[in-house]
Image (tube, rainbow, N blue to C red; front, side):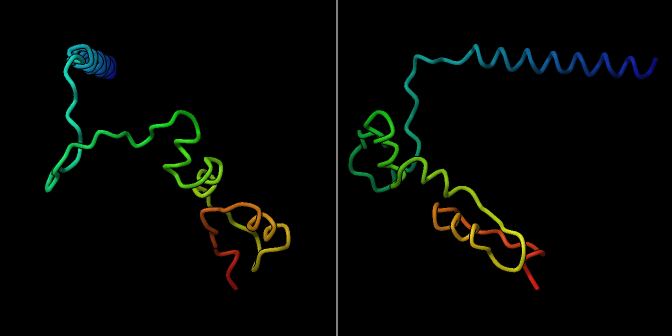
Length: 109
């Protein structure tokens, strides 16, 4: 009986949290413009340009400073078995601009 009461209380709390989240989400005023984030200390003018003004990958590549595929590849780390990289591993390293190499206990003598 005690377990049933706890489950009922937990279900009521979950329902209450869901109700509060729904009310808060629906009560938002989307008509007002949001203030721009960031510091205005020492600013003499209001910036009017967007970070990405061109549609598609060209604008993204301008921001990233590299093609999207290369920028994503730099997020990954790779590892290799043994005490040193073998020829296939060296070829993989040369073929892509990986973010780094992970050395583990198996790589150390």
